[in-house]
Length: 203
Image 1 (cartoon, rainbow, N blue to C red):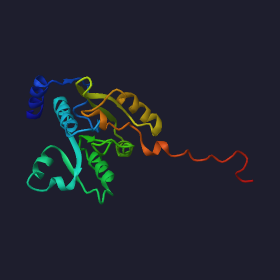
Image 2: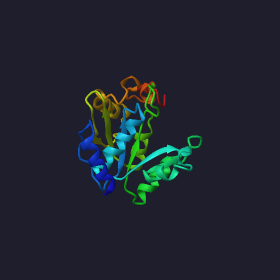
Image 3: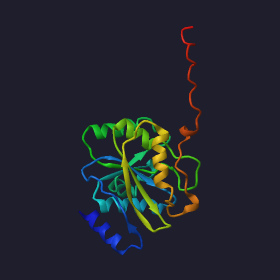
Image 4: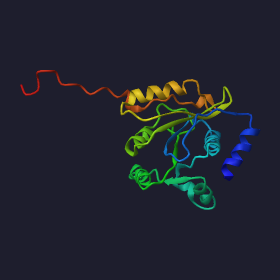
């Protein structure tokens, strides 16, 4: 394929080193792109997936799909999202998978290229509802390496899943380390629901 050939040439000439774990070309899943500190991080993720030979889709602001470059965004696998009315997005993605469409959805959980406080939880929610595995993609300027890391199936225990994610990204810095956001979901900092005391119910 042309994408794979171009990616092969890119990585052979690049100062960056591609270090990636195997991923099924005929599979489907959520592919996390992190840390997301620069537009170059996303470009690298496209080059990583092209070299792996896997079909990808990504979510983009709907305004980016207007002329004159809308055709290019779609050609690269983009799915337009109106952030003012995101309802139904997860249902649409689940329906695509249920209909037999096979692709890896690239998600940047940081949601911004600037340093933030939390990651967005959509990547885990989509994976759980669609029954898809999550693959951790990365870019690390400190070692000049990029690629695909481990793949896991969300357990439903958010803190346990995020502990695994944090362990992997602990030494990954992105293109601009100063903009890196620690992998943590807002849900993790919510207080645990109080459990009723034994012997109270039905008293």
